Image (cartoon, helix red, strand yellow):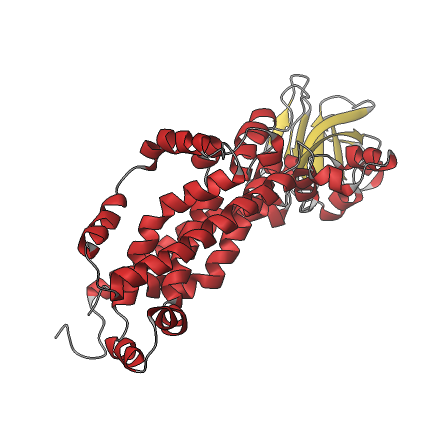
Length: 409
């Protein structure tokens, strides 16, 4: 009965549930990082990103006048007012007054606002104050109150969202410093490519990732076609070598590759890191593309050979167009690897600011000097993942097709 058409098995339902959970586990932190990158630093320290649209509390000390107090039976003096009305609002931002919401309050400047709205705080002198969330205040005292009540409060502010975080991290300067530099004639290009700006490392990362993705694909496509459709001595041994190289740790190759680069005068340069990433990515590329090309219809290849097509013509006009899913699948993996790489970049690139990639810039500069400024770190992190997300969502429809290549005959 489990295999009746139209009925889903328990394994299928469990698979769908697990998929949904994995998607949520991936999306929720990404969404939180995106929202945090647009929030102000004070808002980040006060509330979590899920409360960004509710507004973050801000601390104030209000001076509540006691002119309206009255004496009731028993000699108790009572004051009833609203902190969002009258002279109490002097010094408060209009946006905070308009929201009219209290997050916490207190009567001691030392302890600050440590009492929830609706509760009562009492001093040793007998003064008791109750403050509601809407600002309604009731104060009672056994003696007539003089002057004003000093009331530490946390009031809910509007959502504090800004794009200044991205401007600051991309240029390396705050708004005030940026305006001062502009007045001195410093151009935008100098700000973007300064040693404190993320824009320069962003361009360097593109300079590394794009060639390091294209070069292995070009080489591996030719090699995969030869291993899939051309007969020559040692083909099986070469296929076995490719599979074996998949499990070799790349750290083993650092020292010999560095020595070889020195022999050829490449040293630490962009050319050196392109060749290094090409070597590290070729085994997976050849393996993935060869498995896909083997699964292509043999009749098409044989008919093309009967018609007099050369191997290069078959490769260029038939195999490459049909292998696009596998090419796109490897391109996603290779681009994500090279974009997020720190280890290879640290070994094969100079340590100067002109050649720094984003991962190294974040580790050495932002975490070292601005590790506590979460609004800057969040903006820098989202800049780092924005391009991989764009690449993934643009080409993800080819990913599964490429990964399953050659798995079923």
